[in-house]
Length: 206
Length: 195
Image (tube, chains in turn orange, yellow):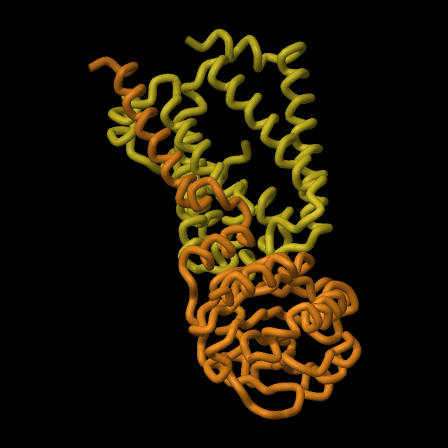
């Protein structure tokens, strides 16, 4: 065999292998960013939440296991945030209105988790909710109490927060949907809360 | 390309090892621009430098499967494409296995095959590859400059825009150098004379 057919053979193998690797690296040419990839992965393989101890704004201890049996809409915040988190907060307050009925029936809760627990104690969490216009029912603001718990939550939810160079953070804000079995089943855009609401309302249909 | 002087063969391996040192690694991964335009290209150079360390009897049979350097250049292009995905830049920071894959595949599947193939490539193959490289710099650079959302969760938007501007500048620089060589230099004619 002369070198031209051999080269052709190897080249075809390289192209086939290369396309296969690119397909895996992009979840089948659907995800070019890690944000899209985490959304596809969560949708296709729901993730059980770790039993991480959490402290709520009223100082009481809780965890995701004790919130099972209802749908949860979860976002990650830090209370010093002057930009997107403050908008996230007022969005959550408006969701309290729109979801008032399932909230009153104990079918849905909203949960804001701080990824800055060193700063965000119960007081700061309570102040954040007040500032955002908390309607008083069905919205829990919590912080993980230890670094291991924070790491575990950020890994499962796929949250990345990096210093913004101005003393705050930039993070991939989103609204995560947790089903009544305590599994993370979807991640939706933080600035389009109707997506998350529709997801939950569909789940509540008999 | 800069190569280490003869007799200092270990220097060829030192670049690869040096890039993997934790402080060097973290410094070069601190911004998107550094990772994409300094660290990954240097890893490819480290692989290129390995070529002369390979035994001749290993290389000669390989050459029969690499007519005009086409197989090697294809391999390098696909491997490089993987490390241009924003998702992989993120994963290389967060997942140690992906980091290991980057530190091995960029030298061994991008730099080394290019070193073994580029000298065998004729004018047409080189021209095609360079045209595609320039187009890629402009396409990706424009995307990074124009995107209103962060494509990497681990890097800031400003960083992404800076990378976009740098890629446009590099694409333009390659164009100018090529135009210069084609019009006045030896590159075009020397390349055309091969084969």
